[in-house]
Length: 167
Image (tube, rainbow, N blue to C red; front, side, top):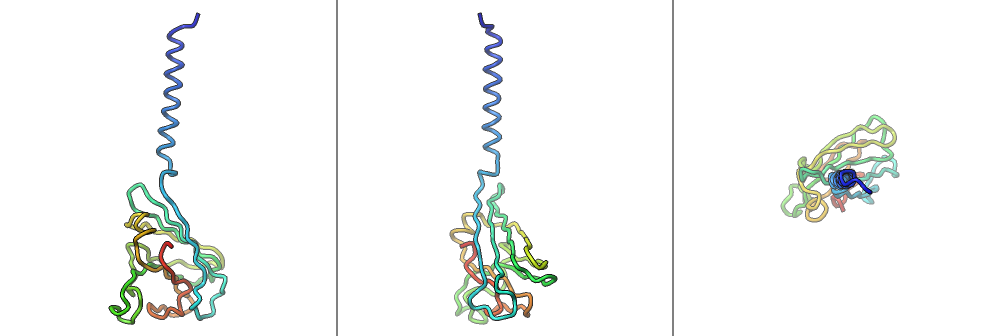
């Protein structure tokens, strides 16, 4: 004959184990969206930087509603500083140099500098815009400036990468 207390204890233990598993699974990072975007050298680029330069942008939704943006640059030049940022799209008729973007970087989305090491480097920033907004409705450009040239906000030939942000 089975002891009723032992049976209840086993059921309670099993229920507790299942509940903890469900709780731990629901609190995992798997509930947050993440997406990567690959960028290669711009077809308009004119300069001496190696042409195998590329950038991977990874956006990850955060619990606070913001988005972590991580850029990994490949084939960088050792000791040179790469300026990387987002520019909001604009009507070219309204910008000082006739560009299709605001020439001031949008630092609330992404504006960083990182030193090359001759290989791969990574830099990140928390953006205050949501993952969904950045990947669907934000109208802007991602720019990576050539560290071997003077920074220009209007000469696309000096941009290693210029492309739609998170697309």
